Length: 407
Image (tube, rainbow, N blue to C red; front, side):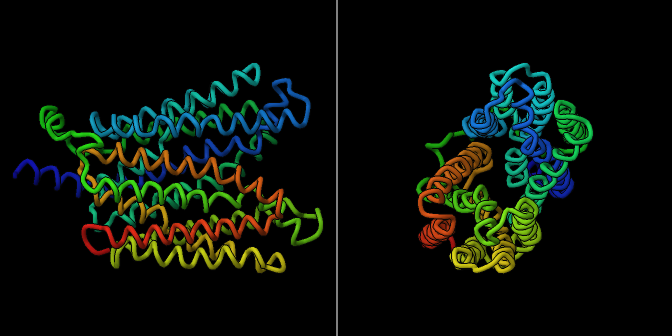
């Protein structure tokens, strides 16, 4: 009992510091990864690809490559974190990503670019590893708030990265931007190595005795439903983003200023998520995770449907901002709910599967949305995403009935 109390006291002493170290590191690494988005086509051209269609194709392949290997390896890294320590996984991810992203600046052809992007996904996973560490170490009555803070930091990195990338490429050149990415992520490595404190690990014999893998988990059917919910909600969240520019052009009827207006609309949605994530997480800790998720999905379903019929740009932008607010509580509440059902020895493994489920939605959403928008017009995409959140709402209500205690 005294040993358990010492572990509990150690966790209480440093979980907040770990949260903010993880949030800062996640912001830095996500900004570093997304920093390459506006310059990737330029780099493909520098590598000798001149045909416009080929540039687009290779840029898409190179961009998706990182998420492919990240999705495949997330459960493995999570499982190893359960066994050997989650701080070690964050150190591995930040150092590996710093090296891989720097090497991209030395690529000589597009095949090397794709291979190094695959390597970055294989070695990376800092933000997902941070999500696992924070979920595991934070007191359960504070978990949704902490995960909301972390989600806001990740979303802020998604906004800052492309802005930094375009600016740096313009000022210093495309290849220099990749070296800057490596340096930026190396800063996250240093902060993680020297500032993050992990709970004392139990003796190896006790860890082996407790470890039981997937088959030993309680509430497996509910956990599977939550993993499916993660995929559905990421699908709904990400689907509309690639067609925003086309829809803005549809609303304005002109190409004048479409890039600026599209960036503003995207930023408003992300800003709503950043502002609401911690607040909705704190509310969920107080009144129930799945209850807040239910309300968020009701609001998101209505707001997404209204975007399909928004008559002009201002109302559409306002709806995107409101949708961002509604979606800010999704990841914190889902992850916090999954964490409630897990023994400590399986947190990394199952939340690793959750990361893979999210990547499944992230990859499939834009593909289906692009095909649907091309066939039926961009308003049909918002109808589809509204239907997806409605399905997510139905799954959430089913999970609430099956939870071992009321939420």
